[in-house]
Image (cartoon, rainbow, N blue to C red):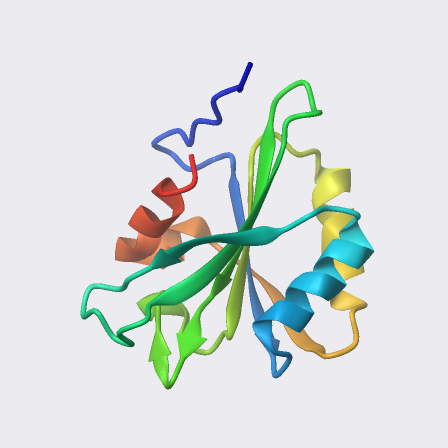
Length: 142
């Protein structure tokens, strides 16, 4: 039975970080998978409002249904050919999103692990409120 993962309207169960890195997306996915012991896989291709670039933005997801309450990890490729998917986060190459019930310890542990990956230059928490109109992209993964 598949458990439904809901994002409530307050987005209180959504955690977002910006990643600055010159690492290619598939290599970054491999490194994250190895360090967090998860299996991110290529997911949907997201288009921004201007439909640029024409091929869209790649996303990679992993749904962990082993937990009592399911959790989801999403890596958004935020920059392609000079265009950004999340217009309020143009300085980041990727956005790392965790959706679900996480303890402070789990969030901090994940942050420490991802900051330790060679090639990740910055891993900065982002307030969900600062995403403004871009929250709709997160709703694609509930």
